[in-house]
Amino acid sequence: MTEPQTPRPKRGGMSPRKRQRISRAIQYAVLAVIAVVLVSLADWGSIRQSFLNTEVAGEGLPALFTVALKNTVIYTVSGYVAGFVLGLLLALMRQSSVAPYRWIATTYVEIFRGLPALVIFLMIGSLPLAFPGYHVPGDVYGQVALGLGLVSAAYMAETFRAGLQAVPKGQMEAARSLGMPYLRAMVSIVIPQAVRIVIPPLTNEVVLLFKDSSLVQFLGLTGAQVELAKFGNDQASTFANPTPIFVSGLTYLLLTIPLGYAARRLEARQRAGR
Image (tube, one colour):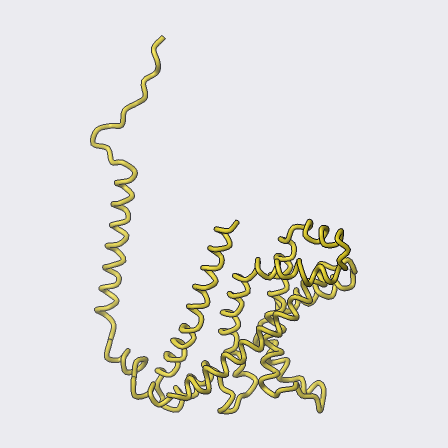
């Protein structure tokens, strides 16, 4: 009995690898043509005058870094700290065996994840109208920490909850078998492991807060309280030139790109560790 012969590839036929190389070369050529067309059609003189005007950009220095950037970092860090603490508390409440705690945490997460951050800031700015004589401690800085904290806590709560669920249950069981109280076991063993697991998404949350800090301008800021977006817009209005807005955008990128890269590196390290 003869073995069936495998069909031979037709001579002159193109291999899949060669077809892939040709397809990739065509795509590169099309992208190069599009880039050349865009470069040739662009009015570089107008672009430089409108977005790369060094004289206008220089007028905003050093206030861009000493005021706007400093306030942006303060707003972001304060909102992150508030969101971290409240988000962890909400995550623990969602894991609680007490039903009302779970209901409260679930309701909070659903509401504040569903509302735009701008609406939260507008509502915080209107608190004195609803409660005459009441002011958030810390003036604008306190309002920003409250607004960003309330928004970020809803997202961090879900992140922390995923981290807590990822910790093996045997960790808690082993701690309790050694006579450790539940609360101490959570604080000493479970929560530290959960935080290490969710470090990459928590780093991404910092990037989101940097961008959301631009909504602070709707609270009404003085010249000493402006952040990058407000500063760029005010400078652009003063000089009737959008260069300051472009410079503010670049400054945001100087902060967010390294943070995004760090988050990706942390995720890669965790995957390699697993």
